Amino acid sequence: EDELPERFRHTWEAKGMSRDPWTLSLAGQMRGKRVLDVGSGYGRQSLVFALRGAYVTHVDIVKRPLLRLEILAKNYGVEHRVKTVYLE
Image (cartoon, rainbow, N blue to C red; front, side):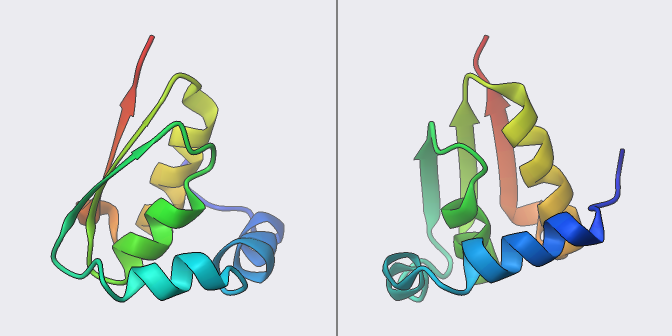
């Protein structure tokens, strides 16, 4: 599946991206940097950092959140800034 359901995208934007002051305050400092995000579920911070110019590697032991992050990154046009790694 390559598309993000509109309902999920709306929830993501309303709850995940635009309302986390801690993430947003750090995101501006990440432009051009490489970020390692380990065990962070659905990768809200990973996506925000990528949207602000960071190159993010997101590592997790659960595959589903990684797949969602890949779809989100593609939908927002930052798939070249997000790498996911599944640890079996």
